[in-house]
Image (cartoon, rainbow, N blue to C red; front, side, top):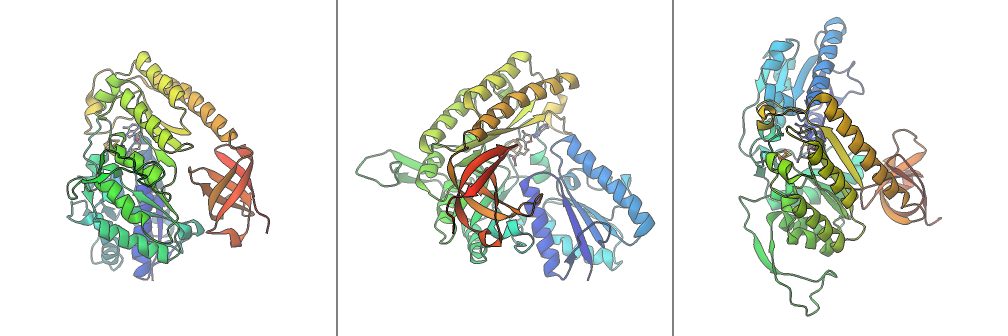
Length: 467
Ligand code: SAH
Ligand code: F3S
């Protein structure tokens, strides 16, 4: 049977899509090649969020095509995912060695199309059509693929995004918001738990909008932060479909931890804040994309919240769950960003003290409104702001990491560290990586470790209980 090598660019959604394609191909008898050079099929699962990500995948494909022409003329080369979706046939016109271009709603057709290409039935295939119900097709898992995936799994709950932030290409590459049903998602989670998974991350481009069009909001009497009614009368909470899903997943016996990404700040209603306090399996960690600290820019970006609203959410979350790890995404150099706007972002970061922040230099994306906005910020100013903001957020992050020294934390052990096999790696509930001297018997365990020192975005620990 043929062998396949899949290289993934971009976000966790893409990682998950690649895993599902790999699982689909393995089920059809394919083997997973260790390197691209020996594979019969090489697939690049691409990202379009920034120009750099597209350039990387295109350069990689050029190199692959060059080697294939010399050493392995029958090798099948394909693009999957976001760039395949947004560029389509143009990718083959540019580089005729490419055989397959498969869009974001077509991952489940990979095996069928590769069969046709490998058997010579078809020479080139481009499929970037929209497909109804494709959101329910990212289901299969490769749990024996790596140690990490047997303990912790990602589950795609929805596809697409209707927010149309003016800088973002995702609504065009991933399409309209489409959600799976709660029953279908819970069934997948149950299967994973039965196979040994203990932590599940619910995935989507805007998970807090889950089920908005299909599942009604339900009213429920609020509880106090200890999870009991205790005779205190609370106003009725409107439980969004997303929180209904969290409740349903939380009820699965044997599951220890729940995470989700990416939410939108506007989705942090009182029901979600309350869920953090109420659901013990919901880890105290939140990635909440900010993008800018300036209201003027937030409006131009079409983000749908203000600086004050964002700060209010952080405050409520910290009150509901002290110690919650909060990370964010920020764009510098959005069109029209002035020094004053940028300073508002700096001051918000000082105020919030994010546990970590991912900073992106604005990259104009085709067909997005921001690409045509006036006052594009010169590259050197984008660089300079990137540098200043990184210095600030990294300083804050390092201090936050140092504050863990001497503390005991619970980790879920994922497996041996990639860099040093004698070390094992796990994550705290607030999503920090911890390295410790471990062995196979620790794998998949929830254990307490004492944090002894910190490295760059890493904690070093010692198991708290000596056996
Ligand atoms: N909600 C999505 C966002 C996808 S893009 C998710 O996380 O799945 C991830 C981040 O990339 C965004 O939060 C934003 O900070 C950044 N980004 C998106 N478009 C960008 C652009 N055109 N230029 C620079 N950064 C961008
Ligand atoms: Fe992109 Fe905004 Fe949706 S960043 S994924 S359009 S919430």
